[in-house]
Image 1 (cartoon, rainbow, N blue to C red):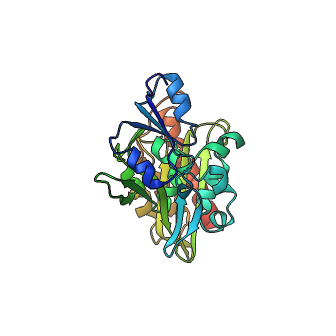
Image 2: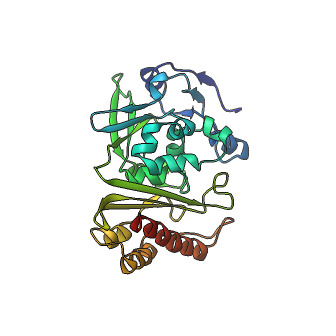
Image 3: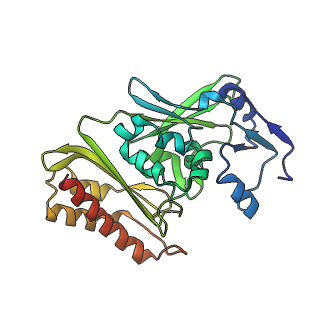
Length: 288
């Protein structure tokens, strides 16, 4: 932290946006990613360090006319403890339930998970399934401005997002799922809750007859960002979830994913995991 010249503690979104105007600011929220990265030398603190933990406007889960608004400082524990998230956005609840340890969940925030932009970020996969949008605010000319964009456009690479240096991520928005919409989340790791994901899969769609309409599939830790799987979705859309459809969808995943080999798993193993776990998830939905 030797580079830090100023320590900022805003109390409102407006104050935070004002402090970000020159863009040379490191933002601190839960710190569960930032602090280890700074100690390892992966991240260097900028001249200004801004602690946004006291901006109460960034906290909480709210119902809106369209669905849900989750503040950037909402912790993973708060997501897991929300009856509404569990009932209406179960894939996001399952991801929160399998997120690290109790100590990390109590500090880690959904905003931090988004801005950290790890390809293996646990909440990113369900957020893609629910077509979530991030909200970003800035104050370039002394007037507060905001913009929103889909999570799929926000994530641009490992540790990289389309957030501008003078912008603050204030939260994420999701439309209420359609009637009959079901969702599932699966994470595989040596110790699924404590480890970084080897792979993760999110699945969603409107249960219609014995198939899915508006099918959505997202996968984590198999590309430079968490991604949607359009070829899998096409293989599922409107089709009965029989053995042939499930097999075709699992095979289609190979066209969507681009895994690498690293310390946690090889390219081949990740492909096998996605294929086999997707088959298992779809079979479970088909028999549900």
